[in-house]
Image (cartoon, rainbow, N blue to C red; front, side, top):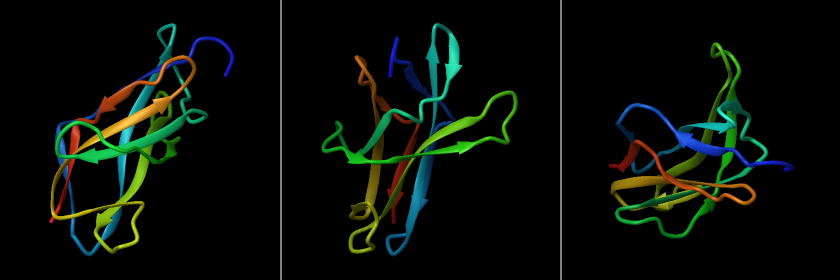
Length: 122
């Protein structure tokens, strides 16, 4: 990507996403990227997730989702499939509550952001 890389900002209400242990569901984190104060599309950047009960650990590749129906601009979500152990989800976890970290890789910036929502596997 030529020129300055946007620095993403995670936004959204403080909440907990609850996922039944036997399920696998997408965890979506809204991400706003700005360059020179202008919102830009971050979906060309690599996005990864880490779910942990402490500091971020290993990161796993995520994906982008765009909601083009929002006004005045699209909403961009980083997302990943999360579930209980043995469900075949991209990230499998034991029962418990986890902090969600999103890593967006640009050049030269690589911010690691803690999402305002947690995930609870129950």
